[in-house]
Length: 117
Image 1: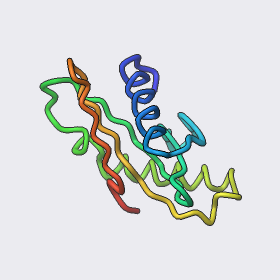
Image 2: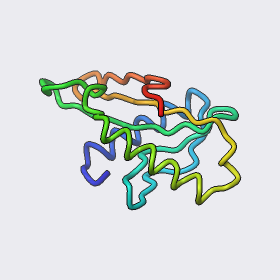
Image 3: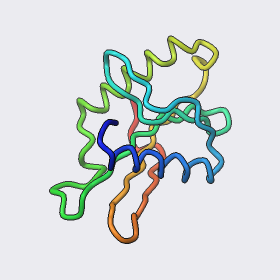
Image 4: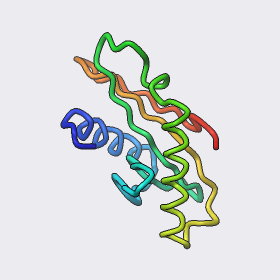
């Protein structure tokens, strides 16, 4: 993500998830189909994390901002990532969402298995 608020949100999400025991494998993986904000490992599971930061008063929630087209791009980018990392290809994959509402409290919500393929 190129926007400073987005980069800060990704760093905050990464630190939070690492405190929960996940291990970062890749940050901002880019390919022709899109970008994966964070690729992490939770035990034997590969976790692809979409990080969303919404301004106060936004028209939709972070969860609602992930369209079907965005989910498809995330899945395609994940397939590309797995093709480039064959040692991970047999891993179970989970798609999580970390939603951050900036403000005085920087509320962070971690939604495991936010969507399926």
